Length: 414
Image 1 (cartoon, rainbow, N blue to C red):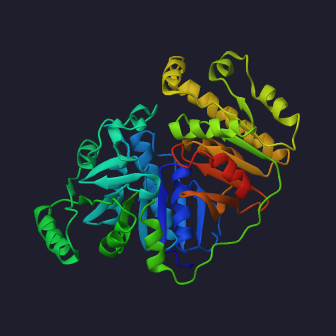
Image 2: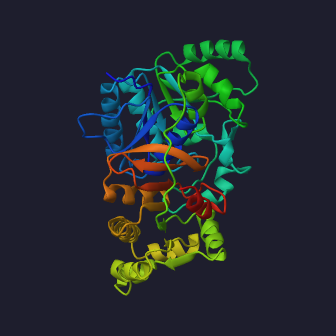
């Protein structure tokens, strides 16, 4: 049996590509699957990442899907497991992070694990057990207005208290290794009758090395992608990610995220002279707009890359959602996936997508079972090459990731 060092489940597709990119950067061969693979023979890799859709799923379904994925990874011989969730957590009381982590802890029979959402390279840090985004407490950052998971607190213990059946404990940030071991002995004695979570601080890139030294051998790790790179370096035996040439195909860029970062990226792309098209959600619902009309615009010049976006300000999104949150999201995701499918059929070999839900819809529609992970466009956003078709270059990014020139960078590097 192939030796799988790490089995990873991620709460959405962009989260999966995010953590996969850091494992590759650290030197471990990595494959990513959209959902639990059904294929008989799985490509050999040291890291298997499964992209689920558990971030906003019904909690019971999210737990069931996560346990099914963990079971599949155990069958592949995975030695350690990683639950990857958003680096800005999910602070709603109905959030799925707690239930999923609880269930997997019990399934793997581990006494404790860590909660580590930080990713300093993208501005996410944990200090005194509180999560900050670009120096601002989570609940005061633009994430407070997220249309699906509004962030109303920054304290990770309080966030978990309403989601989890198990206690969470903040680890003092000024302890050396020996002091941590003493502290852990005391905490374990206090919680000997129940699994528990440790919330360590993680403010700087170099903190990751310390955390991996302390917790890198745990059977289960939970968090963002911040620990993947040092974990990979610790276990690396032979490096080098697969080398894939750049494509000269035109690109279809699709943006469904309404995050401030993605809106800035759209603006910069427009200011650079890039061709764009606004997919109006209300017109799509009324029938005034359609996939056929948008595709006609795209196909008028198939040699030119174009960005199709539905991204808008939080205020306008709230107004639009009065038409029905699920209906609006469903229509937009279907339209975006339709366009991606038409583009690939027409010879667009580069598909670049911004937004977690949007990326998941596109990936599901295109139907590729798995991906090789190539070089990154920006931290946490790799180029992905379908195992079934090495001509295709795909980029899926979380709405909050990337600098303002992200779309331009993606075009230049894929």
